[in-house]
Amino acid sequence: MKEFDVVVIGAGAAGLMCGATAGYRGKSVAILDMGKKAGRKILISGGGRCNFTNENTKPENYLCRNPHFVKSCLSRYTQFDFIDLVDRHGLAFHHKTLGQLFCDNSAQDIVDILMTECEWAGVEVTLRTEVLKVSKNEDGYYLNTSNGDYQCQSLVVASGGLTMPKLGATPIGYQIAEQFNLAVLPTTAALVPFTLHDHDKQRFDGLSGMSIDCLVSSENEQSFRENILFTHRGLSGPAILQISSYWQAGQAVSINLLPDLTLSELIASWRQNSPKKSLKNCLSEILPKRFIEILINEQAIPDKAVNQLTHTEIKQIHDYFHNWMIKPNGTEGYRTAEVTLGGVDTDELSSKTFEAKKAKGLYFIGEVTEVTGWLGGYNFQYAWSSGVACGLAV
Ligand code: FDA
View 1 (cartoon, rainbow, N blue to C red):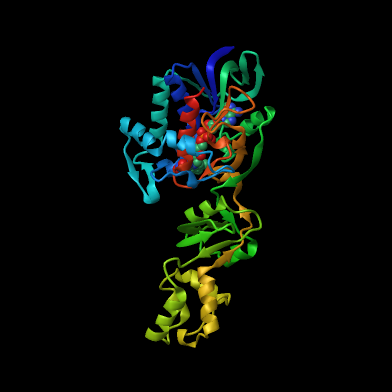
View 2 (tube, protein in one colour):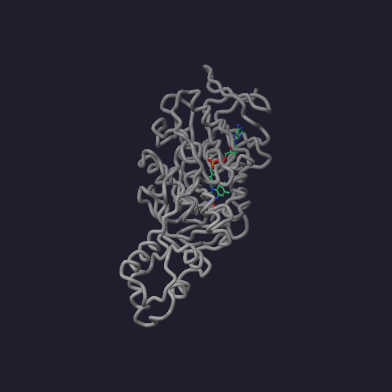
């Protein structure tokens, strides 16, 4: 049996950060992961370039039953602290829109930085080791793994969520929480594309690959201004992924297809300047033509010259484009989702240390907790921040 001060389950973003932080404090640390490589989700993130943080990270960018929970860790280890770390390692990176930071070369650079930090901190990272069972005895925590048994004073669960099962996602973190009588909030896929009902799929067949800059709103009035993308299964694109975290089965989403314009005013100007022009041709100047043709063919909007439109029709057309309602059939689920909504209830954890209030020496960090960030580097920032807070406490 191997003995350590700290055992971390999961060599992902949160686990590696926590392990290195604890190692630098002189703790003996083992990080165990069932994968062949460390940081497998980091490697596939951001299209292979890892959107590793967001310069504008704020507690408001997270969904959590207790909105105050993330404040402490985000303020103790900020996005700028992580930027300092990657700067010290000479990482080449660039800014994209909305404060998102990406590697210039490859996400592998982020994994290399974390593995180097672990090495410098004297942390043992052991791969191909699946944690099968955890128990508690008078000496601390005892782990049965596919690669021998471990004993530790502090057990950190950084086993992630349920997304991408083929990358080794397991429910072990939730099972350990339940074993120690901690509440786990129901889990669902988030930051995930929507699937559409068959009739909508048929309507938009042929639009696959088309994207439109929109303002998308959920029934609880959360809005995101980014692109939507038609796919052969339904709708995706950053605005759709964002709103999926706020969507519940059976609800509709409202899509403002012309967020920078007031369509009724535009129609008035068309009526004045080119009265005989068809509505179809006018609209095709501001939205993709194939999309407008579908709406005309299904008579969602009239096929008329703009000077023939009645005032009632103008109002209906205005409302239609500024509040286009779509009722998704569901989501693509954990197979393609970026994150898991729900997880270990943060009311069960200290927001300073991430230790379970009911189980001394047991900690939960990263995605296994019910904290879910927006798209745009926020999820990795929470992994870094929760990892450091916990690594300073174990
Ligand atoms: P993570 O899932 O990374 O690590 C958990 C580890 O635990 C895994 O390595 C797993 O093998 C291991 N494990 C599980 N069960 C085990 C067991 N029983 N025994 C041993 N090991 C076990 N976020 C972001 O901010 N920017 C981005 O660009 C992206 N992009 C992105 C793309 C895609 C395709 C996905 C799926 C996700 C993203 N994300 C993202 C989200 C981000 O990847 C995610 O929030 C973090 O990886 C969570 O880090 P954790 O360390 O908590 O879990």
